[in-house]
Image (tube, rainbow, N blue to C red):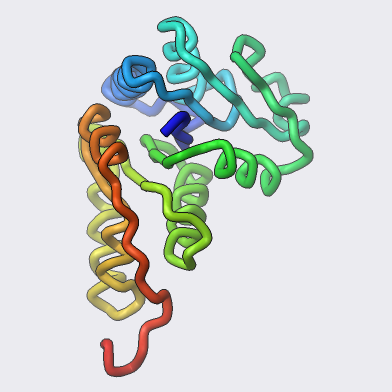
Length: 193
């Protein structure tokens, strides 16, 4: 593994623990010589994790659409910044440059990115690890919802297991280091229900 994509909020959230989690993940990435790939912003948790990785001497690659760069939310102090046409190009490049994906606390954009890479894994388009940095139980409700989705026959257990959750960034990265992909058919047959 060389780089981890981190999805997170363009806001910092109301709890100081969210920023602390971003800084701890940054420290763990640098300690393990893993680069950060992220959305290229200089605001919220995005800016916090990027600033911390840079401060600690790590490598940060940002990918941001021109429209957001024009609004002056692009981070100009990164190792590398790619300015792309749109969100589709942004997400494709983030996925291409990354060896795994972590979602920190964030809003609907973070959730959309998380569910997209989960869907891609489910369909066999990639076999990279996916994790939640579940700071202060932020994702507990989502994990319960996904369990219900599985119980109602819309998600296989093996596909639910694609998503690893921990409140500890070092534990997440350790899971990534030992991750062995499991390939399971996407489609559920009637007898499987």
